[in-house]
Image (cartoon, rainbow, N blue to C red; front, side, top):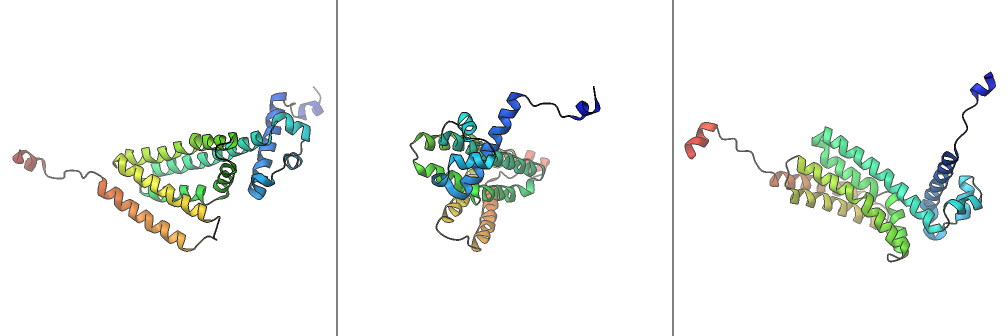
Amino acid sequence: MTTESAARPPRRTQAERTQEMQRRLVHGAIELLKKKRYVGLRTAEVAELAGVSKGAQTHHFPSKDMLVLQALEEVYRRTQVHALERIAAARAKPKQTLALLVADSKAFFLGADFLLSLDLIMIDPESPLGQGVKDLARRYRLPVEQAWLDLLAEAGYPRRTAEEVVRLTYAMARGFGIRQLIADPDPADERLFTTWQKMAQGMLDAAKPKADSRPAARKRGAT
């Protein structure tokens, strides 16, 4: 074997080349969807941005909606990974659980990812595209909510209260996210999140069963 052949990187397999091309197309679609939304997206422009031919793009994603749903799935996959990282951090530092829950809700609902998914589902909620968006949301977002609920339950809080806190936190962030469609972000929003975090902690503390701290002798005498 010559030095030149030894230094040459191994040839990629067809499967690896296909995966790389699909990755470039999906990432290009995500970038353009965030800039131009669904209506302004042109698959030819995605192919150009990804550096592939229009024919290759059509081969891998025969329809615009197929490409769009694949792009949205990648967006949801990333956000789920980040959410699970925050949950792991909260498990390691329980006192930061609520702060991390609020941070997780803000990261998704106040960012471009949520607006992208909202735009897609508003095209026609009952269309195959709309149904696909809802399916992805259920597959990737509901498990995140459940993981936060399970974490609070593991910490000893009643599941009903834990569920109320998680769902209200997400509902608040979702509402602020939708508000961005009609108004600029309000500096007061951060204060409201802080207020809600204190209220949520109060709800959890009030609902958590109190340990009976009476001395053992007094307990026996009371029976």
